[in-house]
Amino acid sequence: MREIALHLLDIAENSVAAGATHIEILVDEDFKNDRLKIVIRDNGNGMDQEMLAHVTNPFVTSRTTRKVGLGLPLFKAAAEACNGYFTIESTIGQGTRVEAEFQYSHIDRMPLGDLAGTMLHLVIGQPEVHWLFHYQAYNKAFTFDDGPIKEELKGVSLTEPAILAFLREMLEEGVEQVQRVSFVL
Image (cartoon, rainbow, N blue to C red; front, side, top):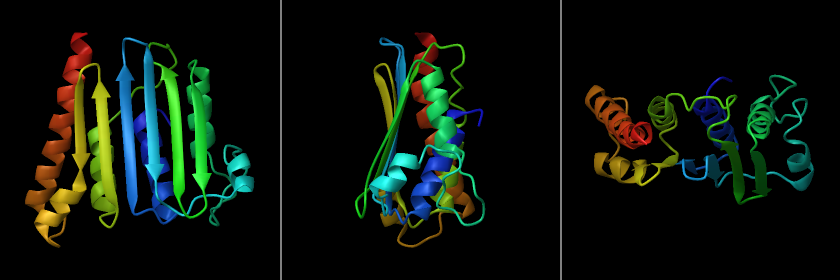
C-alpha cells in the first residue's frame, strides 16, 4: 500500500469484520518531535494471545478466502523502516488497538493520502458502526463523530445525495483546515 489512508481503510475493515461497533482512528502529525502517529482502536471480538503473537506474519490470517494477510505486516514494516514502531494489543471480547509511529521527515515515509475520502468510505460503507476520527497537526485539530449526525438523521440513509455531499464537505474541510497549518509550518 502506498498511502497511510489505505492502511487505515484496511485495518478499519478488519475491525468491522471482527464485529466492532465502535472504531476510533487517530492521526497525529507532530512536527516539533518529527513524528507521525496513527492509532486505530475498536471494540470488536479481539484476538487470543496465540493469534496476536502471529498477526504480523503475512502467512497467518483469519480470512477463509485467501491464505495470506498483508495489511498489518506491511504497515509494521513501513513504520519500522521509517525509524518508527508498530504495536498491537488485543483482548478477547474487548477489542484491538493498533498503533504505528513514523519519523515524519523520513524520506521513505509514505504520504497520508486521502484521509477525508477514506473516512467517508468507511462511514457510508459501514453505517452500523460508530466512527470517531481525530486528526491533529501542531496546534490545529479536527474531530469527526458520526454519532450525533446519525441521531439527527433518525434513520435517513447516509447515501442520500444531500447527506453524502454534506458528509464529504465536512470531512474535506476539516482535514484541509488541519493540513493548511501543516504546510505553513
